[in-house]
Length: 125
Image (cartoon, rainbow, N blue to C red; front, side):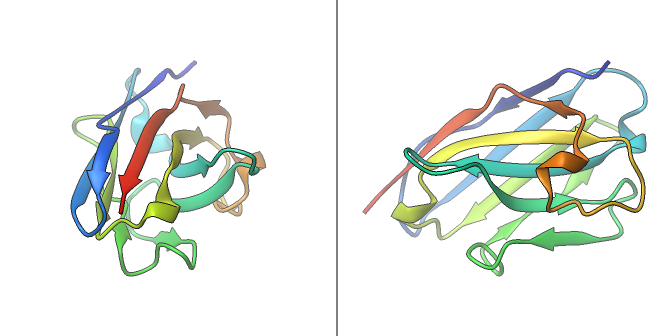
């Protein structure tokens, strides 16, 4: 069992920056591929970014490519979402997720076994 706790959400101005953190319990953090998803009001939850177990590969949705990054620190059992130049359309509840399966599509929410409770990000114009 893995518990994920997100933090760092809040209100940010467009063009600013914000860093979300997701802390995982347990000692096997480096066994998990990690992802960030988001859900805006009235919309389905969608993929934002993902990183493989070792951190060797990262993946991004087109809307955030070039603006967001997803570093991980396996020593701290934490994955981050660094948001640079956020836009009002990035406003959503952001969820982190952990998946044990290897060789899966990390952009697919079904590849994940554990989810955090979510953290609200609001970007003002």
